Image (cartoon, rainbow, N blue to C red; front, side, top):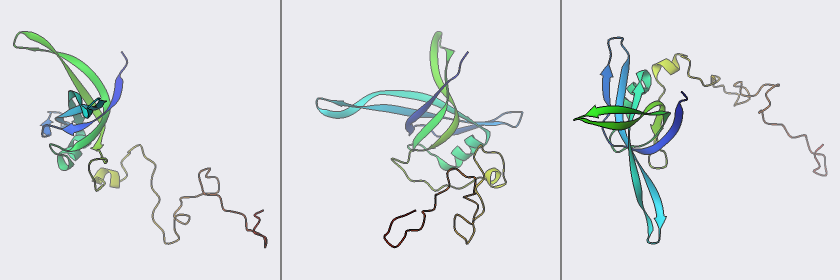
Length: 165
């Protein structure tokens, strides 16, 4: 069975709730409302709203607890799935997301980024290491190497007529 990954843009509508399991793993769960904006004959209006439960494991969940709250505009990316639940004699389908990334929607909010202790200590994040800062500027800090295809190209010196070689 193939996993379906998607991105949600919406607002957090419930407070994040943490659960800790016997294994020591923790999970944070919250609900998001995603409302489509539509343009009609009378101007812009709200379309249907999708309500979805988002689950975040371990450090991602801990970071959400410390930085997000009800009403915050968010963007969440992860695996979406539907599970069936028997409730009061009827069978319901519940749509959920197991998020791998969550952050504020910077169109509607501002954020101050603070790295976690694990990221600062060099834990694998899937991102390239940033070189240490240097007083020599970006070139001296290891940003550009002779074999770097993305390094800025230095312009050839111009002659007296202003023509570059």
